[in-house]
Structure formats: C-alpha cells, structure tokens
Length: 442
Image (tube, rainbow, N blue to C red):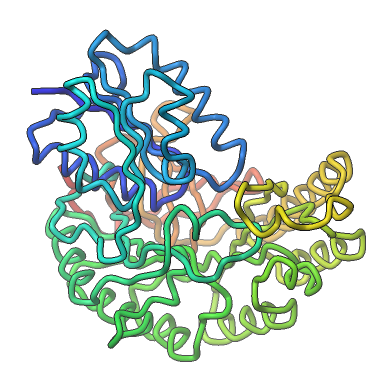
C-alpha cells in the first residue's frame, strides 16, 4: 500500500479539493499519512491568487526534496498547477505530475504512469466535473466544507481565478443536500458552502436562496455558513433566506476590495461604493447582530491618495469586524497587466497605506470587541489553541474566535461562555454551562 501525503495552500476551496483527492486515492488503495516523512507520493495543492503564494510553493518544493527517496512521486495540483502547466515540469525535474482542479479524477491513473517514470500535465477544464461520486476524506472533525459552485464569470481585472478555475458552474441542489445529510450522519454539525461567488449559485432551477433554505432544513445542521459571496448577488430573496433560516449564522464575509468607486470601476467589480454600502445596510436591517468581515486590496494601479482615503472612511463607517488586507499583486494573464506603467503605485506608498489601514482596522475592531466584554454567547469548540496548555479555540455564530479552558474531549461540542477579555481580535472566555454535546466525526 503506497503512502500519500497532501499539503494544502490557499483558500477553503483548496482544502475541499484536497479532501476530494485524498478520498479518491484512499478508495484506490493508497494510505494517507500526516506528514511527508516516508511518503511514496507527495502532492502539493497550490494557490495562485498572489505572487508570494506561488513563490512560497516553489520554495516548499525544494524543501520537500529532503523527505523524498529515489522513487517518491512529487506532484503539484490546484490553481498554480493550472496556471503554469507544463512549465512546472520544465523548471523542476523532480516534479512528475501537474494536475489542475478539473483533473483530479485522473489522479490514480496518472500516478500509475508516474511510478513507471512518466511525467504528466493535466490542466484541461471540464465544465461538467463536480466529483459527485467522490467520497471526501475530511480533515476537520467539526465542520464540513461543501463546494456548491466552481469557477467564476466576473473576471475582475486583478484576479487570476477565472483562468485557473474556469467558467462558473453550479451543482444540483439535491446533490448538495445529499452530501449535507451524509456529513451530518458522520457527526458534523456546521456546514460551510463554498463557491468563488457563492451567492450567484444557480442550478438552472434553484437559486442561492433555495439552497440556503434546503441545506438549513437538513436535520442536524446547527450552523450554516458560506464563502465567498459577491455584493452584486445579494438579492432580496437571498437576504430573506438568510434571515428566515435558523441555521444561517449571523456573519457575512463580504469582499469590498476598495472603498473608492473610481478604483472599483478599474477593478471591474461592477458595483460602486454606494452600492456596497446599500448592500450592507439591507443585510443589517434584516439580520440583527450581523457581523461583517471583508477583503481589501491596497495599491491597486491608479489608486490615488483620495481613493485610499475613501477606503479608510469606508472601514470606519461600515465598522468591519475584521478584514484580510492585501497589497496589490500583479498576476500574469490578467487584464490589470495591460494598465499603463505610470498607474503603478510605488512600493513605499503601498506599504504606508497598508500600515495605516491595518492600524485603523485593528483599532476599530478592538473598540467594538471591548464593548462586548461580559456578553454571553454560544460557541462551538473547534480545536486546541496554538498557545497555552489546556486551552481550546472556539467560534461563535457571528464568527468571533474565543479561547476557552478545557481539553480535547470538548472539541466538536457547544458551550455557553462569558467573554472575559480581548486581544483586539480574539476573545478569552469563561465556560458558563454546556449546551449541546455533539459527537466528533472519526
């Protein structure tokens, strides 16, 4: 029995894809191991969203060589594999396989050839592929990542995803519901629906509102989340489904990217600053206590001081609970590469803006979190905390991270906690009493 190790980089969709690949290989007779030591097959599932993500993977491929014996198969999968294709085989002689996100079905066959010394690149798009017959080997014993949509049709000028994931296509609603029932039977109670623009979901008959209601109605689903939505696709139907479906959590990760309409237009985001503010207002009016997190790009070509100040005021006025902040990264093949060179923002300016925005974001989040001390809330214990003995990391419905005392037997269970302190982004909490105890998936 050959041993396989999969190392994952990037978004939740990549995590889900790694679970699918591992499930497929286990079904084909491979044994999963937790690290690269002793592996006969090492697969690195990659991200291409920013240049530093790719450079990190290239560096890691070099590091993995020390774990490889003469017959070890090294493969690169995912978005970076899709983007670079055969070039990866040309630049690294130890790489035997380059497999894009629509070619995981062929992995066992490709590995058979690689064992014989052959090298392959499989990066064709398959607009019918949803891996419905795959049995995912889930890494998380608390929540389930369930892809409902692949690809993206928006084609924002900075984004490589349409070129690595292909056009948008959605699974059938009944298939998503079937998979939800299966994971609930395994003991998982939190479902996270995945898509590049997940709320644009449509299977030709049902939209995202129908999907939320159907998945939320599955017995045993306690929490329902989704990522990442697009501001343009929050119809009144979708917002009503969020408000009416008890399992849908009071949190939305809503990428803004910029607070400047002028910059948003060059990004081809297809909404204005005012449209974004209106979307936030509509959701908050329908869902009391809703928390909102976001993504913001700093230093997009042509971003002026005034454009950046509009982003700063948007962060202040909306009151995001958290944000992923990124310095603009030019990606080969995207429309942004055709912008005039004079529009590029100098690195030192980008760094200054990034630091200002980061400080403002942290300050605002800390002030909001300080006001919540003493509040009681339900949390789901997810895993052991990174630091501190006998400490666990838990998550509230509105996506607040709470560190609580306890041991591993509490993972996968719900508790009520009182918020006792905050670092600004993370809370500490004291257990009040146990709410619902759920079994942890084996």
